[in-house]
Image (cartoon, rainbow, N blue to C red; front, side, top):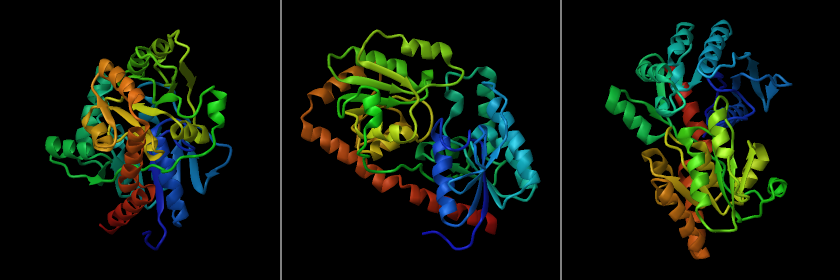
Length: 367
Protein backbone atom coordinates (compact mmCIF):
# COMPACT_ATOMS: atom_id res chain seq x y z
CA UNK A 1 0.00 0.00 0.00
CA UNK A 2 1.28 3.53 -0.75
CA UNK A 3 2.61 5.59 2.12
CA UNK A 4 1.52 9.14 2.91
CA UNK A 5 3.66 12.17 2.12
CA UNK A 6 4.92 13.10 -1.32
CA UNK A 7 8.54 12.76 -2.44
CA UNK A 8 10.59 14.45 -5.13
CA UNK A 9 12.32 11.71 -7.12
CA UNK A 10 14.75 11.79 -10.06
CA UNK A 11 15.29 8.87 -12.43
CA UNK A 12 18.48 8.79 -14.52
CA UNK A 13 20.39 6.41 -16.78
CA UNK A 14 17.70 5.36 -19.28
CA UNK A 15 16.87 6.70 -22.72
CA UNK A 16 13.80 8.23 -21.15
CA UNK A 17 10.06 8.07 -21.62
CA UNK A 18 7.73 7.44 -23.37
CA UNK A 19 9.28 3.98 -23.67
CA UNK A 20 10.54 3.48 -27.21
CA UNK A 21 13.55 1.22 -26.81
CA UNK A 22 13.93 -1.46 -24.18
CA UNK A 23 13.38 -2.77 -20.71
CA UNK A 24 14.82 0.07 -18.67
CA UNK A 25 12.68 2.56 -20.56
CA UNK A 26 9.54 0.51 -19.93
CA UNK A 27 10.56 0.25 -16.29
CA UNK A 28 11.07 4.03 -16.10
CA UNK A 29 7.63 4.71 -17.55
CA UNK A 30 5.75 2.15 -15.49
CA UNK A 31 7.40 3.14 -12.21
CA UNK A 32 7.43 6.92 -12.67
CA UNK A 33 3.79 7.18 -13.75
CA UNK A 34 2.63 5.03 -10.86
CA UNK A 35 4.64 7.11 -8.41
CA UNK A 36 2.99 10.24 -9.80
CA UNK A 37 -0.44 8.64 -9.34
CA UNK A 38 0.49 8.20 -5.66
CA UNK A 39 1.18 11.91 -5.31
CA UNK A 40 4.95 12.04 -5.80
CA UNK A 41 6.82 14.47 -8.06
CA UNK A 42 9.00 12.56 -10.49
CA UNK A 43 11.55 13.80 -13.02
CA UNK A 44 12.87 11.44 -15.70
CA UNK A 45 15.99 12.44 -17.63
CA UNK A 46 15.52 11.77 -21.37
CA UNK A 47 17.72 11.65 -24.46
CA UNK A 48 14.96 12.37 -26.98
CA UNK A 49 12.97 15.56 -26.79
CA UNK A 50 9.22 15.30 -26.20
CA UNK A 51 6.74 17.86 -27.47
CA UNK A 52 5.48 18.48 -23.94
CA UNK A 53 7.46 18.90 -20.68
CA UNK A 54 5.05 16.53 -18.91
CA UNK A 55 4.20 12.96 -19.85
CA UNK A 56 1.41 11.32 -17.86
CA UNK A 57 2.25 13.67 -15.02
CA UNK A 58 6.00 12.94 -15.07
CA UNK A 59 8.42 15.85 -15.59
CA UNK A 60 10.69 15.21 -18.58
CA UNK A 61 14.17 16.72 -18.52
CA UNK A 62 15.69 16.59 -22.00
CA UNK A 63 19.48 16.36 -22.14
CA UNK A 64 20.69 16.06 -25.77
CA UNK A 65 22.85 12.94 -26.18
CA UNK A 66 26.09 12.35 -28.00
CA UNK A 67 25.29 9.53 -30.42
CA UNK A 68 28.11 7.07 -29.89
CA UNK A 69 28.01 3.32 -29.29
CA UNK A 70 30.35 3.40 -26.30
CA UNK A 71 29.94 6.89 -24.87
CA UNK A 72 26.26 7.77 -25.28
CA UNK A 73 25.01 6.31 -22.00
CA UNK A 74 27.92 7.51 -19.90
CA UNK A 75 28.07 11.05 -21.25
CA UNK A 76 24.31 11.49 -21.02
CA UNK A 77 24.18 10.24 -17.44
CA UNK A 78 27.12 12.44 -16.45
CA UNK A 79 25.52 15.58 -17.91
CA UNK A 80 22.17 14.58 -16.37
CA UNK A 81 23.89 14.23 -13.01
CA UNK A 82 25.39 17.71 -13.29
CA UNK A 83 21.90 19.06 -13.98
CA UNK A 84 20.52 17.09 -11.04
CA UNK A 85 23.17 18.47 -8.69
CA UNK A 86 22.09 21.97 -9.73
CA UNK A 87 18.40 21.10 -9.39
CA UNK A 88 18.38 18.56 -6.55
CA UNK A 89 15.51 16.24 -5.70
CA UNK A 90 15.03 14.33 -2.46
CA UNK A 91 16.17 10.97 -3.79
CA UNK A 92 17.61 9.63 -7.05
CA UNK A 93 17.29 6.30 -8.83
CA UNK A 94 19.98 5.45 -11.38
CA UNK A 95 19.60 2.64 -13.91
CA UNK A 96 22.48 0.59 -15.38
CA UNK A 97 25.51 -0.45 -13.36
CA UNK A 98 27.79 1.37 -15.84
CA UNK A 99 26.57 4.63 -14.29
CA UNK A 100 27.79 3.76 -10.77
CA UNK A 101 30.71 6.15 -11.03
CA UNK A 102 28.37 9.17 -11.20
CA UNK A 103 26.27 8.37 -8.15
CA UNK A 104 28.69 9.91 -5.60
CA UNK A 105 28.10 13.32 -7.20
CA UNK A 106 24.42 13.12 -6.36
CA UNK A 107 25.22 11.87 -2.87
CA UNK A 108 27.63 14.76 -2.29
CA UNK A 109 24.74 17.07 -3.21
CA UNK A 110 22.75 15.57 -0.34
CA UNK A 111 20.65 13.01 -2.20
CA UNK A 112 20.53 9.32 -1.29
CA UNK A 113 20.93 7.19 -4.41
CA UNK A 114 19.63 3.77 -5.41
CA UNK A 115 21.27 2.04 -8.39
CA UNK A 116 19.50 -0.69 -10.36
CA UNK A 117 22.48 -2.61 -11.74
CA UNK A 118 20.49 -4.74 -14.24
CA UNK A 119 22.37 -7.84 -15.44
CA UNK A 120 26.00 -8.65 -16.23
CA UNK A 121 26.33 -6.21 -19.10
CA UNK A 122 30.03 -6.95 -19.64
CA UNK A 123 29.07 -10.32 -21.12
CA UNK A 124 27.33 -8.75 -24.11
CA UNK A 125 29.12 -9.60 -27.34
CA UNK A 126 28.66 -6.11 -28.77
CA UNK A 127 31.20 -4.56 -26.37
CA UNK A 128 34.91 -4.31 -27.07
CA UNK A 129 37.55 -5.12 -24.45
CA UNK A 130 37.63 -1.58 -23.06
CA UNK A 131 33.85 -1.48 -22.63
CA UNK A 132 33.84 -4.87 -20.92
CA UNK A 133 36.58 -3.67 -18.59
CA UNK A 134 34.49 -0.59 -17.76
CA UNK A 135 31.49 -2.76 -16.92
CA UNK A 136 33.63 -5.02 -14.75
CA UNK A 137 35.01 -2.02 -12.88
CA UNK A 138 31.47 -0.66 -12.57
CA UNK A 139 30.33 -3.86 -10.87
CA UNK A 140 32.84 -3.17 -8.10
CA UNK A 141 31.94 0.54 -7.97
CA UNK A 142 28.27 -0.40 -7.64
CA UNK A 143 28.97 -2.01 -4.28
CA UNK A 144 29.95 1.27 -2.56
CA UNK A 145 29.28 4.32 -4.80
CA UNK A 146 25.47 4.42 -4.46
CA UNK A 147 23.62 4.37 -1.17
CA UNK A 148 21.88 1.12 -2.12
CA UNK A 149 22.15 -1.49 -4.87
CA UNK A 150 18.93 -2.79 -6.44
CA UNK A 151 18.82 -6.13 -8.28
CA UNK A 152 15.80 -7.35 -10.22
CA UNK A 153 16.76 -11.03 -10.40
CA UNK A 154 17.68 -13.45 -7.62
CA UNK A 155 20.57 -14.72 -9.74
CA UNK A 156 22.05 -11.22 -9.98
CA UNK A 157 21.56 -10.63 -6.25
CA UNK A 158 23.46 -13.85 -5.52
CA UNK A 159 26.20 -12.86 -7.96
CA UNK A 160 26.91 -9.60 -6.14
CA UNK A 161 26.76 -11.38 -2.81
CA UNK A 162 29.16 -14.17 -3.78
CA UNK A 163 31.64 -12.11 -5.84
CA UNK A 164 31.72 -8.89 -3.83
CA UNK A 165 30.15 -9.72 -0.49
CA UNK A 166 27.60 -7.01 -1.25
CA UNK A 167 23.98 -7.21 -0.21
CA UNK A 168 21.33 -5.63 -2.41
CA UNK A 169 17.65 -4.87 -2.31
CA UNK A 170 15.81 -7.31 -4.56
CA UNK A 171 12.89 -5.75 -6.43
CA UNK A 172 11.57 -7.70 -9.39
CA UNK A 173 10.50 -6.29 -12.72
CA UNK A 174 6.78 -5.93 -13.41
CA UNK A 175 4.37 -6.68 -16.21
CA UNK A 176 0.71 -6.10 -17.07
CA UNK A 177 -1.49 -9.17 -17.17
CA UNK A 178 -4.35 -10.27 -19.39
CA UNK A 179 -4.71 -10.28 -23.15
CA UNK A 180 -5.79 -7.29 -25.19
CA UNK A 181 -8.60 -8.04 -27.62
CA UNK A 182 -7.64 -5.74 -30.50
CA UNK A 183 -5.48 -6.99 -33.36
CA UNK A 184 -4.91 -4.01 -35.67
CA UNK A 185 -1.15 -4.56 -35.89
CA UNK A 186 -1.70 -8.21 -36.82
CA UNK A 187 -3.72 -7.11 -39.83
CA UNK A 188 -1.00 -4.65 -40.82
CA UNK A 189 1.63 -7.39 -40.68
CA UNK A 190 -0.56 -10.05 -42.33
CA UNK A 191 -0.59 -12.20 -39.21
CA UNK A 192 -3.46 -14.26 -37.83
CA UNK A 193 -4.34 -14.92 -34.21
CA UNK A 194 -2.55 -18.01 -32.86
CA UNK A 195 -0.83 -18.51 -36.22
CA UNK A 196 2.62 -17.09 -35.51
CA UNK A 197 5.60 -17.54 -33.23
CA UNK A 198 6.89 -14.32 -31.71
CA UNK A 199 10.22 -12.98 -30.50
CA UNK A 200 10.68 -9.34 -29.46
CA UNK A 201 14.22 -8.21 -28.71
CA UNK A 202 17.07 -5.90 -29.58
CA UNK A 203 18.78 -7.41 -32.63
CA UNK A 204 22.15 -8.05 -31.00
CA UNK A 205 24.21 -11.27 -31.01
CA UNK A 206 23.69 -12.21 -27.35
CA UNK A 207 19.91 -12.05 -27.89
CA UNK A 208 20.14 -14.62 -30.71
CA UNK A 209 17.42 -13.49 -33.14
CA UNK A 210 19.50 -15.06 -35.92
CA UNK A 211 19.51 -18.42 -34.11
CA UNK A 212 15.74 -18.17 -33.60
CA UNK A 213 15.16 -17.47 -37.29
CA UNK A 214 17.37 -20.37 -38.39
CA UNK A 215 15.76 -22.78 -35.93
CA UNK A 216 12.29 -21.83 -37.15
CA UNK A 217 13.27 -22.21 -40.81
CA UNK A 218 14.16 -25.86 -40.15
CA UNK A 219 10.56 -26.66 -39.13
CA UNK A 220 7.83 -27.53 -41.59
CA UNK A 221 4.79 -25.45 -40.68
CA UNK A 222 2.51 -22.90 -42.28
CA UNK A 223 2.65 -20.76 -39.15
CA UNK A 224 4.79 -17.63 -39.33
CA UNK A 225 7.62 -16.21 -37.23
CA UNK A 226 7.37 -12.54 -36.25
CA UNK A 227 10.82 -11.21 -35.30
CA UNK A 228 10.23 -7.78 -33.80
CA UNK A 229 13.09 -5.43 -33.06
CA UNK A 230 16.07 -3.40 -34.15
CA UNK A 231 19.19 -1.99 -32.49
CA UNK A 232 21.54 0.96 -32.81
CA UNK A 233 25.15 0.27 -33.77
CA UNK A 234 24.45 -3.30 -34.95
CA UNK A 235 23.91 -2.86 -38.70
CA UNK A 236 26.03 -5.83 -39.81
CA UNK A 237 24.32 -8.27 -37.48
CA UNK A 238 20.86 -6.95 -38.35
CA UNK A 239 21.63 -7.55 -42.04
CA UNK A 240 22.36 -11.19 -41.19
CA UNK A 241 19.09 -11.53 -39.31
CA UNK A 242 17.15 -10.06 -42.21
CA UNK A 243 18.94 -12.14 -44.85
CA UNK A 244 16.21 -14.71 -45.43
CA UNK A 245 14.12 -15.84 -48.35
CA UNK A 246 11.58 -17.63 -46.17
CA UNK A 247 8.21 -15.94 -46.72
CA UNK A 248 7.02 -17.15 -43.29
CA UNK A 249 9.46 -14.83 -41.50
CA UNK A 250 8.06 -11.37 -40.75
CA UNK A 251 10.59 -8.63 -39.91
CA UNK A 252 8.82 -5.27 -39.47
CA UNK A 253 11.35 -3.59 -37.17
CA UNK A 254 10.27 -2.21 -33.82
CA UNK A 255 6.66 -2.19 -32.64
CA UNK A 256 5.63 -0.25 -29.54
CA UNK A 257 2.53 0.54 -27.55
CA UNK A 258 -0.76 -1.16 -28.27
CA UNK A 259 0.64 -3.02 -31.28
CA UNK A 260 3.29 -4.61 -29.06
CA UNK A 261 0.60 -5.74 -26.61
CA UNK A 262 -1.49 -7.16 -29.46
CA UNK A 263 1.44 -9.21 -30.76
CA UNK A 264 2.07 -10.67 -27.31
CA UNK A 265 -1.60 -11.41 -26.70
CA UNK A 266 -2.29 -13.39 -29.85
CA UNK A 267 0.89 -15.38 -30.55
CA UNK A 268 0.86 -19.15 -30.87
CA UNK A 269 4.03 -19.22 -28.76
CA UNK A 270 6.67 -16.78 -27.59
CA UNK A 271 10.38 -17.59 -28.07
CA UNK A 272 12.90 -16.02 -25.70
CA UNK A 273 16.59 -16.47 -26.49
CA UNK A 274 18.62 -13.93 -24.52
CA UNK A 275 21.93 -15.06 -23.03
CA UNK A 276 22.82 -12.01 -20.92
CA UNK A 277 21.00 -9.86 -18.40
CA UNK A 278 18.84 -10.17 -15.36
CA UNK A 279 15.07 -10.30 -15.58
CA UNK A 280 14.09 -9.65 -19.19
CA UNK A 281 10.97 -7.48 -19.53
CA UNK A 282 9.80 -8.93 -22.84
CA UNK A 283 9.73 -12.45 -21.37
CA UNK A 284 7.66 -11.43 -18.34
CA UNK A 285 5.36 -9.28 -20.46
CA UNK A 286 4.68 -12.13 -22.90
CA UNK A 287 3.95 -14.46 -19.99
CA UNK A 288 1.64 -11.84 -18.50
CA UNK A 289 -0.35 -11.94 -21.74
CA UNK A 290 -0.72 -15.69 -21.31
CA UNK A 291 1.82 -16.76 -23.93
CA UNK A 292 3.16 -20.27 -24.30
CA UNK A 293 6.89 -19.71 -23.74
CA UNK A 294 10.00 -21.40 -25.13
CA UNK A 295 13.10 -20.03 -23.41
CA UNK A 296 16.86 -20.36 -23.69
CA UNK A 297 18.09 -22.10 -20.55
CA UNK A 298 20.02 -19.58 -18.51
CA UNK A 299 19.71 -19.18 -14.72
CA UNK A 300 18.01 -15.80 -15.14
CA UNK A 301 15.52 -16.97 -17.77
CA UNK A 302 14.77 -20.12 -15.76
CA UNK A 303 14.14 -17.99 -12.67
CA UNK A 304 11.34 -16.25 -14.57
CA UNK A 305 9.85 -19.03 -16.71
CA UNK A 306 10.82 -22.28 -14.99
CA UNK A 307 7.81 -24.54 -14.53
CA UNK A 308 5.69 -22.43 -16.86
CA UNK A 309 7.70 -22.67 -20.08
CA UNK A 310 9.75 -25.10 -22.15
CA UNK A 311 13.56 -24.65 -22.08
CA UNK A 312 16.07 -25.19 -24.88
CA UNK A 313 19.88 -24.96 -24.97
CA UNK A 314 20.76 -24.40 -28.62
CA UNK A 315 19.41 -24.03 -32.16
CA UNK A 316 18.75 -27.73 -32.66
CA UNK A 317 16.82 -28.02 -29.40
CA UNK A 318 14.78 -24.94 -30.27
CA UNK A 319 13.77 -26.50 -33.60
CA UNK A 320 12.72 -29.58 -31.65
CA UNK A 321 10.70 -27.51 -29.17
CA UNK A 322 8.93 -25.68 -32.00
CA UNK A 323 7.96 -29.02 -33.54
CA UNK A 324 6.92 -30.31 -30.12
CA UNK A 325 4.46 -27.49 -29.40
CA UNK A 326 3.04 -27.78 -32.91
CA UNK A 327 2.23 -31.45 -32.23
CA UNK A 328 1.06 -30.83 -28.68
CA UNK A 329 -2.67 -31.19 -27.86
CA UNK A 330 -4.35 -27.82 -27.51
CA UNK A 331 -5.34 -28.51 -23.91
CA UNK A 332 -1.65 -28.92 -22.99
CA UNK A 333 -0.77 -25.66 -24.74
CA UNK A 334 -3.55 -23.92 -22.82
CA UNK A 335 -2.25 -25.38 -19.57
CA UNK A 336 1.17 -23.87 -20.23
CA UNK A 337 -0.36 -20.52 -21.18
CA UNK A 338 -2.36 -20.45 -17.96
CA UNK A 339 0.78 -21.33 -15.96
CA UNK A 340 2.63 -18.38 -17.53
CA UNK A 341 -0.11 -15.94 -16.61
CA UNK A 342 -0.40 -17.27 -13.06
CA UNK A 343 3.37 -16.99 -12.50
CA UNK A 344 3.38 -13.32 -13.50
CA UNK A 345 0.29 -12.53 -11.44
CA UNK A 346 1.98 -14.03 -8.38
CA UNK A 347 5.51 -12.63 -8.83
CA UNK A 348 5.67 -9.63 -11.17
CA UNK A 349 3.01 -7.04 -10.33
CA UNK A 350 3.89 -3.43 -11.24
CA UNK A 351 1.96 -2.19 -8.22
CA UNK A 352 4.04 -4.40 -5.94
CA UNK A 353 7.21 -3.14 -7.66
CA UNK A 354 6.10 0.45 -7.04
CA UNK A 355 5.35 -0.36 -3.40
CA UNK A 356 8.88 -1.72 -3.00
CA UNK A 357 10.58 1.30 -4.57
CA UNK A 358 8.44 3.70 -2.55
CA UNK A 359 9.44 1.87 0.61
CA UNK A 360 13.11 1.90 -0.46
CA UNK A 361 13.09 5.65 -1.11
CA UNK A 362 11.56 6.39 2.28
CA UNK A 363 14.05 4.11 4.00
CA UNK A 364 16.96 5.85 2.26
CA UNK A 365 15.67 9.25 3.33
CA UNK A 366 15.30 8.09 6.92
CA UNK A 367 18.93 6.96 7.19
